[in-house]
Image (tube, helix red, strand yellow):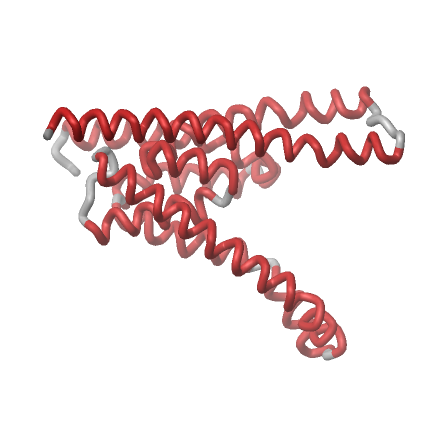
Amino acid sequence: MKKNTGMMINDYKELTHRIGRIWTAAALLLIISVPLLFCLIYGVLPDWDAFLHGAVAIIPMYWAIGLIEVFNYSPMVGSGGTYLAFVTGNLLNMKVPAAQVSLRKAGVNPASDEGEVLSTIAVAVSTIVTNLVLVAGLLLVIPITQFIKNDLMLSSVFDLTTGYVIPALFGALGVVFISKSWKIALVPTLLMIIAFLLIPALYQSSGIFIPVMSVVAVVIARVMFKKDMI
């Protein structure tokens, strides 16, 4: 029985990786096809000098972020969840919290076979709900936008509050995750706040600090663990 179960688990993992690679490649082709079709339909080509200058400026940062996100988030969402999450996006504010909450509520270890399946289901459900909300938003955005624009008071309130949506979202998520291990999160959080206050321009490339602060958090956790502080 155990042998059969082990074979089923191995087959599941192998199938997950095979399908994940296929759909990831398909998603990349679809993403590339949009600008490619514009070029073919309208008979235009990009300015390669401008393209290379822009690529040199942003690709190293995004490659670093993309690489560290795989190592950071894959253990949290499992292999199946990783393929699905990286294709659909919104890892930090949707997929990872959904997987973590489902694992915690079920009392399942993320590294277990049950955790692998449960986190994948959580990411899939989160993706479906997100898409439904987006469709509803698209259907409602035009009449609501016109209604808001016609009301001067609502328009001014809407313009004022729009800039606080993202900070409020990440602030709420930050409270949840920081409260779990506040001793470990305290130093990296303070370092980032001080850095942004002293050099505001760093905010434009804040993503590059994700791997740096991850290393800092690991070092702090190791030191605290040795001293029986956590």
